[in-house]
Length: 330
Image (cartoon, rainbow, N blue to C red; front, side, top):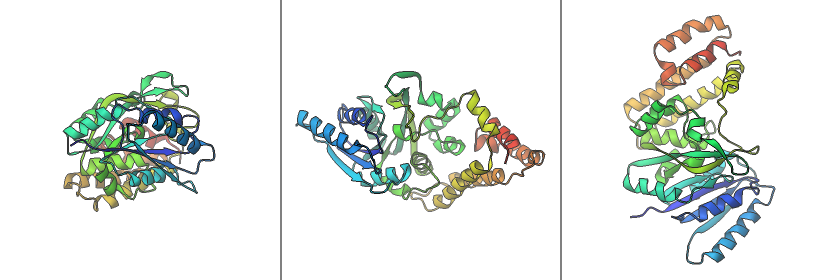
């Protein structure tokens, strides 16, 4: 049976770009059954724009049935909580996440839904994206390449071991992902320590199957108003990471690992003993990193032990994280 698709579209002061995004969703070759718009207390005319675009499109397409529901937040919830609200309101078999400022390729939903229909065990599928500027002009790079997603990470995902890649770092971007509704149910409530796409991905990998479609199906717009955009990983950015204070970042990584460990034992279906063991080891690694002394010289023995044991490669970026831990100021 064909799977029904809901779109969780989150907005906040998105009047400048939401017309293009909404039309790209409505004009899919396989239209969604519904679009749930969760507006996070916009102070511009985002909702008026959505209403005008939707009304005009509906008048021009009387034979196509797409339901549009709008949730209005009187107080801003923030990105993660707003997406959680939108996802919870969706009723489709599949839920596609949508930012307000991107543009979907016309066959995005058709290609992704077909993969889910062929693979009943698939919990979450994410794709590549083409990076474009504020005017929609291609920047000549894709999201996966910009994020330096390695061949090892891609192999881990394709071979059914996405948990290995995701315990190193997140490689799943919300604007590119589609999930089954039952995954959303077991991932809720979303913890404040995690961003929504990272949390959905790690829960999916711990309890089911995640895969990657290495095809750009979204134009991922980069502009000054991005709440979450593609990270800059150029040489200057890497140097900045080595000289940035380490305390807040390591505390955040430890908090995330702790929440994951606490929640993982209650997930259903229950993660395998092997996956739970890796999650526990990830927590131990982040405890070590967070507890490193202020003296760089005294950091050498524990960092060397973890490096020799392979922990920096299993639970991080390897040598770059070693250098971080040895050089970053407190």
